[in-house]
Length: 103
Image (cartoon, rainbow, N blue to C red):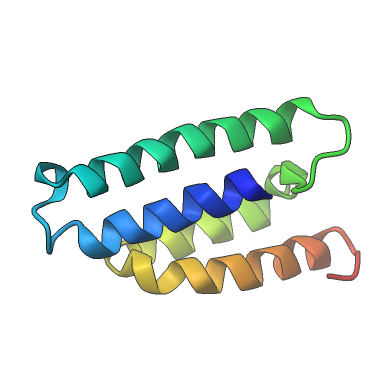
């Protein structure tokens, strides 16, 4: 959970503050991007290798869920910083509904 929070938080910060501080000219943005990439990679490694992961990505095996997620992100690609909070709240609920579990 900590890896996911660090990765998404740093991604949000770098996308929000990047244009203001001229992207990679600022050391803080470079560090945030590094933490986002490394944290994201470690998060996915942990989720895909552990027997009982904290986030179950098997929901993406459902074609409708995966396609809907892709289309949502593709349609809203210009407003990433506005979609991250919504994605964090609604994706688990959609995944739980897809697998007939309570969220």
